[in-house]
Image 1 (spheres, rainbow, N blue to C red):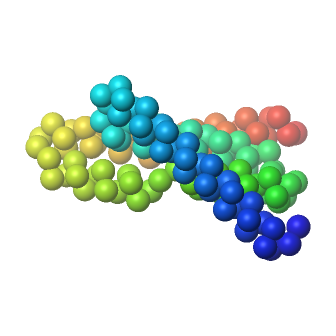
Image 2: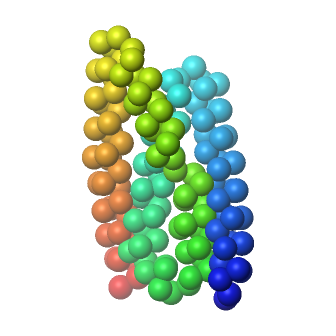
Length: 128
């Protein structure tokens, strides 16, 4: 597939992932949950899924699928910038907000690393 074709797949996947992230955020908001719940959910799910794709060797086996799903969809689904805005907002809050921030960061980084590793391992087991 040409570079332009792959770029189009990344764009289509990114649009779909972004729409899903928007929907997840809206769903958590409708349940009166803090905004960071949606961000945490999509970032952890994206970590697991990208780990799975890597473990499956998707990038080497099917560049088009990896461009759409790995780079595009998961790139649109997960969000580092929103995470940082939420961290800054919590830092400006009171003591309770800062305690919540510590738990949020631990869940995001430790959970993300653990789920990525789990996804890689699962993908490797499936593929090999």
